[in-house]
Amino acid sequence: MITIKSDEEIKLLRIAGNIVYKTHQYLKSYIKEGITTKELDRLGEEFIRSQGATPSFKGYEGFPTALCISINDEVVHGFPSDRKLKNGDIVTLDIGACYKGYHGDSGWTYAVGEISEENKYLMEHTEKALFEGLAQIKPENRIGDISAAIQKYAEDHNLGIVKELCGHGVGTDVHEDPKVPNYGKKNTGPRLKKGMVIAVEPMLTLGSPNIYLDDNNWTVITRDGKNAGHYEHTIAVTENGYEILTGDINNG
Ligand code: MG
Ligand code: MG
Image (cartoon, rainbow, N blue to C red; front, side, top):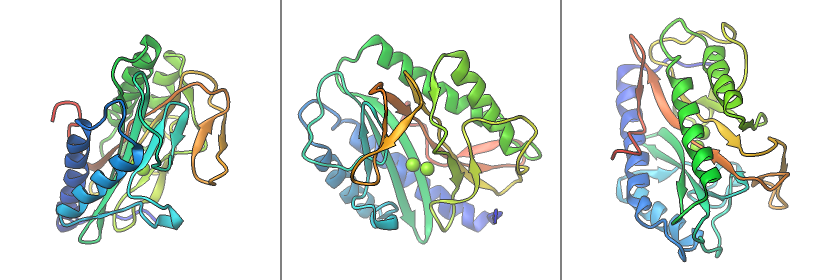
């Protein structure tokens, strides 16, 4: 069921989203060669709690940690561990925070030190694919308009679309209806309405989009070992368009 949020609920979702945004800002400066992903997770959880929120993903269907941290060919749901970031890696921090029962969700891929041209290409165009999708958002447009715009942009840039995973509604649950796929047809799917809150999150790859599930039953990894990028914002549909609830991660 797709829920329409009241102005009061949007206020809380805005606070939750802003906490997610500030957590990204806080962690950005720690993304350097030598730090373990476990340490990033610890810092992130501490920061989220310092804001009066709780990490949305910790304990979610048994997920063990506050953050999902995925390196290189890991697409999503990487487990923080003793693995150290290396110069040239790309790393995605997927962060969720719950404030007074309402969630925010945003994933973002970062460079560790100097990265290759192909990784820069992947990051630049996965982020742009997110904004191509967001540009479709206004009342009476449909979910398929977002999906089709992301698919077109990814295909025009020769990037693989991971189809098993998709965006979603956000509210009192971190994953609600509707599903927001990263591929599809214009003019299909549920209509957008003012007060709907959704996370849009293209996950694109440099090679084939085929994936497998790690032995830990969570982490999604590309079969061909090529890298993946992931950019996600939680947004609210407004009268004329949309409001990003999880902030301007590049310019903050
Ligand atoms: Mg999400
Ligand atoms: Mg996320």
